[in-house]
Image 1 (cartoon, rainbow, N blue to C red):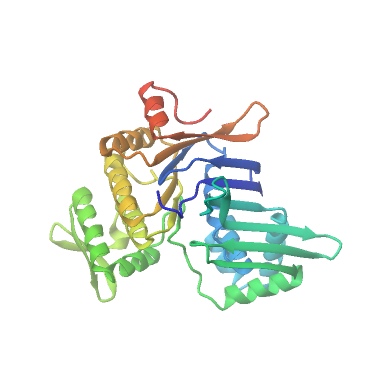
Image 2: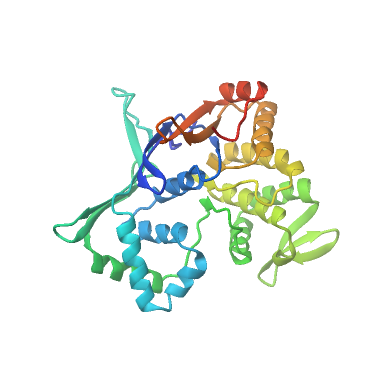
Length: 349
């Protein structure tokens, strides 16, 4: 496995996670569990840990904590914007998230190195907030530790959002479908690299009989059965395939987090989806984290991994223990395949 892959995560005071720790992740990791057990919050915590500055951290918090329509409205309503920022700052003043890899220290093999770390602490006596962020892909990343008064932080965030176009992340695919404009950007970026573009076309042809994706008058057009269609004319299934495949190809040597991966995918296409993900994530050296509610999706994941003899996978079950605290069971490939073969319930405990 690649040295940048996450081996351990620690989450404190984020949504339903009070003091949570899990370890033993693989290249591809599928997360299951009952409704409202924290699957999406787990993914969001991973995403937040990539923030390399306080401003980027709170921009990410806005992305996952607020519906996009609300964000757009905040751009034009100064009073509401300031109030929203203040609430967001206070809501997460005890947040601590750390994604850890194994550090390259021969004399200390047990040492864990935080590849992504965010901490927010409130100093009530001084009336300010202390923010520490670090995102380090190869032990040389950005890090920043600063004290902000609330008014100063609001001003910085206000300036940042008003003067920068809202950016979506290729690293995080939410359960809400990406807009046609975002997919156009992803396809356009893929088009810049012939090999990635050919790989995208190849897989779409295998599943949806799409002959090619071409850029016509600066817009991606899908050619199928000899006719071109705009993205807005496509179903959710093919859009999800495009989003996942293109994002992994563009995120070489990186991470991707996919919430409710089965959304819009017919169960008959799940095997093909997992075959593509397991294959291209290995080629692109991308670590994948995905959540699902679907038994068919979990069984498909196991079936395809066994077929491809891919042992760099895990299945993570989230649930509550006897003390009603969130806990996890991380199964490696061998344990997971045995668990599935015995016919055990795989959708949470």
